[in-house]
Length: 480
Image (cartoon, rainbow, N blue to C red; front, side):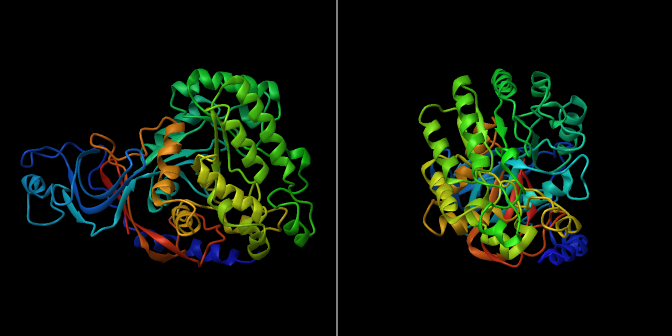
């Protein structure tokens, strides 16, 4: 068995116990009737007292009290200013009364917009032994995420109205906001475009064949034109398979360690260079997914000087780890594109720092212990990331002085929400009551996951930044 894969097996045995340990509290069902009159107001109320608000959209950073009514933020006021108003709506002496009204004294904990991840794999339909929409949503809530955008490489693929409806309908039954991309091409075959207009009208928020690059230049050009008409971005996985001998590992020190060919950096660089050129010509929104090379970062930097339509994501593992992690952790650190060299890791951090890379997205990619225990060249690529990403951002970017906490939250909420036109990523009166409450000074150990899978090279590590509450749609959906 591959090193550390035993930890995944142990996780699978502990999965039911983890369900008991994690307290997902739904204050009021989405389908429940409105509560009776309470004082001056109707509806369920949550009073967040003594919180340190960090909102990247307004630039607010300071002590604020927040009053939530149903699924909206009703009031934001200076510390202590909402106490009288709260007393007027309380119906009992308990802090959490029979109507679901709750007062939470945060004692200085930070309050931020719920995180937004625009690159996750919930494996549903088709691969639900790895993850499903319900377990993925619980992992997201535990990590502080209130909105996620699913990738479309499922089975069947999200290239038709029926599968799209299945995903969206199931997503509505979770406690967070679940959106999805649809495929660019039918069956992920790269030969024929999907009916992008219909899929967009039905609720797809973007288009991607993630996991498979688009090799046909004419097809990509037409896809960008069609997506632009819909007002949706196209997100691209940039690896030329013709240049790759073995995927998931950098063609260098790590590949040499295992005696295989690996994936050279040119596989990414050549695709990014080609696709940026096409996107600039078409003036269409293009996002380079999980960027991994310093050269690709620089290509995006130069393209962004020409057009505001160019965007890029960085995954936490790419700004945290190098190919040395693959030698240490085996298949638990195998991913596409692969972990590369220290110069690439630092270039990605610099790209996040100067805004070349707009977003942090996890590429949450669950796999079973049995799959990851296969020989290196046979094991699937990918790691889970929803439950560790915010802490890695604090540890690698904030605590080391590359980004402020405000900047980290902006790249994990407001920026991805803006690209995908989601009503998320900000904290304002009348805005969505989607919040993450965390303590950046406290630490936790990566052990039991809410995800169905546990394929992570970070198992056993101590992490800064404890998410204590996630509130979505005015309901506490995760409570540590």
